[in-house]
Image (cartoon, rainbow, N blue to C red; front, side, top):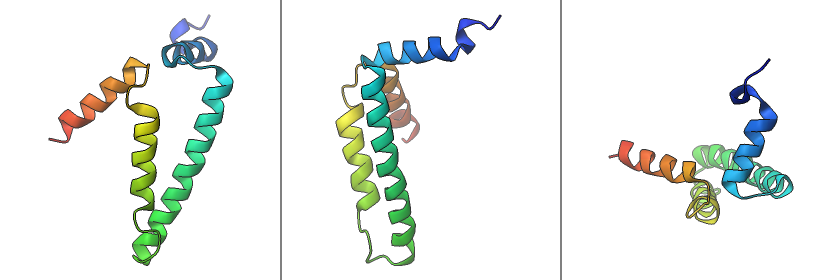
Length: 90
């Protein structure tokens, strides 16, 4: 028998509970955030080749997603990720 730590349904429910979200809301946000990040990645590649194109697009997208979604997020894991990255970047 597979233990709970390897059970995808259990892990998904635990993640959604920590995030205080429904599956649908989580799915919609993750889909659109992923699409924005893909677009920003492509824009960044093009910007690398022709700096006049897509100035600031990737940075603005990351900053918007960070402030919209991660700052004050109910999942305590995100606060830990943020503090770990701040500590490691010094």
